[in-house]
Amino acid sequence: MNYYLRKTIIFAVTLFCVAAINFLLFTVIPGNAALSRLGTEATPEKIEQLSKSYGLDKSIPERFVSWLGGAVTGDFGMSSVYPTRTVSELIGKRLPVTAGLAFISLLLIIIISIPIGLVGSKKPGGIIDRITDISALAFMSIPSFILGIVITVVFGVVLRWFVPGSYTAPSESFFGYVGCLIFPALSIAIPKTAMTVRFLKASVRRELSEDYVRTARAKGNTRDEVLSHHVLKNSLLPVITFIGLIVAEVMAGSIITEKVFDLDGIGMLLISSISKRDMNVVQAVVMYIAATVVTVNFIVDMIYRKVDPRT
Image (cartoon, rainbow, N blue to C red; front, side, top):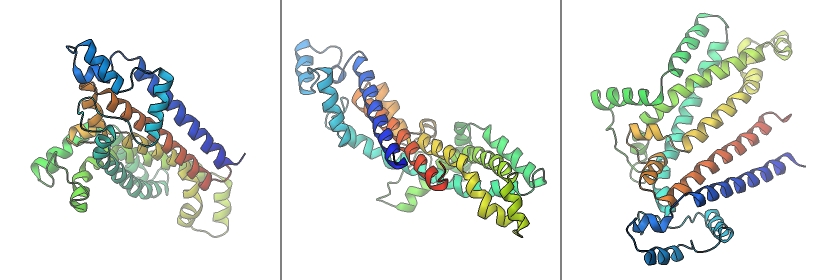
């Protein structure tokens, strides 16, 4: 079977299984959307009436088919805490925050880690190699929330380069949108960049010991030419996997970073929905997170195939 077709089928089956597990988990949890909306002091008659309007009186298979059909079209029903707001509307409002944070973080990681990793790998055991190793270990050991607090205090409070907690929508000002996300993105990107540098350097060192490198050098290629034209492509394979995990993690909602910088993203929505027992929103966010992880892994598999046809 064709590689792409096989991966696509696995992707679709995995998404379906994730959706089924997600639905069943929230089905067995005590309480329902009607009870969350009306409160514990509501009469049984009102709870029964609202449950029928939500379709909770149907069998589990019927409810799953109905929910899955809505999920495919992006319709997860109404919020039980905000009756006039749809779940999709609540998620859609916060998605640009988390998506922008993920994109800027990824951009910073790629721009910074690849040049540093290659420069540090040119002379194994040299001064630059040691400096990058020590720096990477130091930054890897700093938790993102500590780095976020330091960035907030130094650049937000002392230098006043940004206002902590402020957010500008991309429709209002693109540069304002990037400006309010660049510092939170830095708190995510710095530890991940250090990890990526370590991954890349280890991969480059492994590739430099291969026979094809000696053959390329014997043909008159310089060390820089071998690194950029031959070694880099092969060294990126494990790095692609790691970066894919980072994208999935950030797109799923950097809860701690959003909390530190007071950004109203997917992570903050999940926390507030859990505290308010808005199960329709929680279920939709969990499905979004799971689908994001599965989709990113699917994309990584496709990139793997493109970079290394032997896969």
